[in-house]
Image (tube, rainbow, N blue to C red; front, side, top):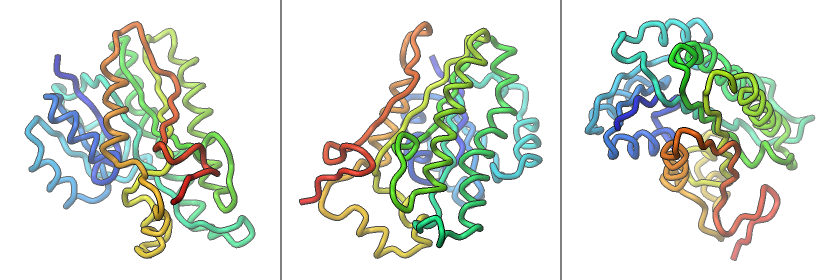
Length: 248
């Protein structure tokens, strides 16, 4: 049976790969992102019904206005995938950029909260729904120069656990998926578009791809109604955790 899937940060990386996979399987998509040109281009490539919403998850007024603007026939959302997120900078805490800190906190934490706050009432009215929060191995341990990024993903971990408790009586599933290293635009953003540094981050081993992560996200939505994957950590074979990667 076709579902309606809302994906934030759908124009690149995990979000784009996840949108493509759900489309291949016949599901309807509500796709959000800040870059309207990319949203439009993606919509045109997908062989399914797509409703595109261009807004910045960091802006609570834009978030509320966008979700409120959905036509009645798109309000029956089955799955919310809180994918929008980023790392910006890789510096020791004493050398960090406040602008980088604000961007990560506003996107990874506040953006996730703003979108969830707008969508949860729709799930409550249905007495069903599935929230999938994209965390990170960085939310399971801290590492050198990870400081604020790790803090935001630890927050996602705590928010996911709290959501699961608070929404239990409303029969809403909450899943956190925590990927390790995956070769996407992530490192380019982290290194402020320094492509050489971004590429070097994956030297010597085979990292995950966006499609790998998308396949796991999709799987968590295929379980029986009485089953929920609460928390899932995902890495390539070469990665044990945030500290240990087997580079040949």
